Length: 93
Image (cartoon, rainbow, N blue to C red; front, side, top):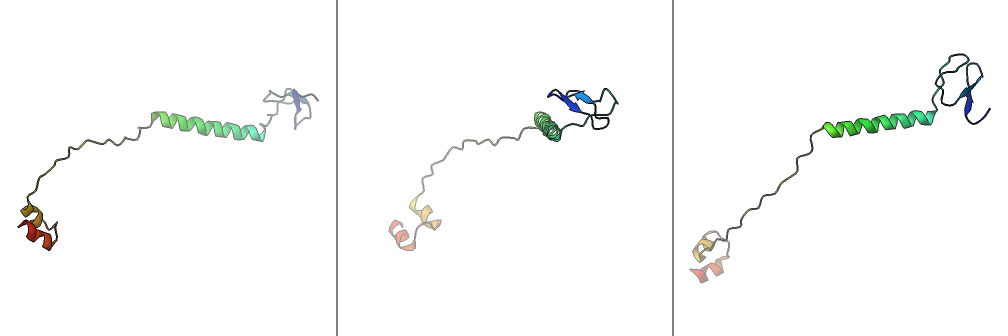
């Protein structure tokens, strides 16, 4: 048996490695376990790509520039807002 052939499990005939059925008995040749896993991962990967292509993109967050306003406050306004302690309030009033 050479490298380019494998043995049929049903009739023990030598079959070409690329064959899916045995030429002697017609039995289906089983796929090697690692090829099954490779096909499964490839199918899942292709499915994820297709889903990614047709899904809506995540909306990006946009920031808007807000103009800062400088508000001049009088000492009375500051005192009325209680931003300054009592002893400083007496200095301004």
